[in-house]
Image (cartoon, rainbow, N blue to C red; front, side):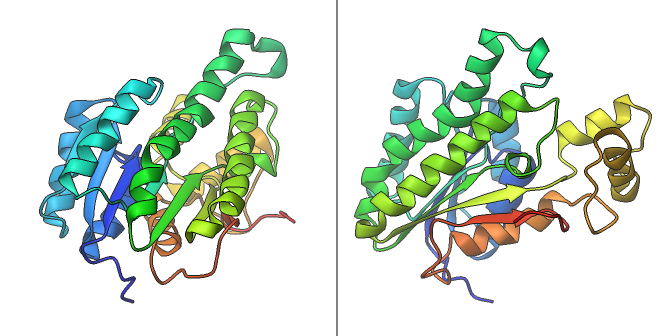
Length: 265
């Protein structure tokens, strides 16, 4: 399916690896101009090389700490110069790494979760809005999490930050509707990300086996999916690509579960 992405300008924050990179791959394969933003130059350079091979000849990696508004502003100023002041797609795929039960978490943990999980997204949207408004069409896709609907005792701060992402995105879908900017959220379930695979390996499970990974999730957390396996980052990318594309012309304010089946309402 032609998603209408040829020559579109797409910025993926957290696009150096995992689900963000999987989305960036989809954009490149449809002929978009893609920038991946993150903190580590080597990771971004490797990702940009992959994107060039997949069909985005001028793909670029931009180093930015989303905790610093000045750096975020500078990053989008660079993209504005590169792409003539316009941006069609903004994807925010960064999430917090804070884990621990409520009793274990201190104030600094909660602040870090909100900072990494929500404030970075807010800063990127703030900086990108002039470019998105200047474009003929524009989409924002933010990553939330299935834990906002299916709680886990070890993820209260992570989940709170992701719930903030969902709420802010819903508000943006309302406030930006007048600009014809569509804003949606993707909530991945148990996806074989580096973090989840690393956790599985730490408890003696082969994290590279999605069936073994889901069995471990069921055993340790009681959160099995209807499908008997974990998902793959490559199964998230196409969903993000559709939401971010011109093919999506009327879907906004949605929270899309990609979770292998659950009891979400």
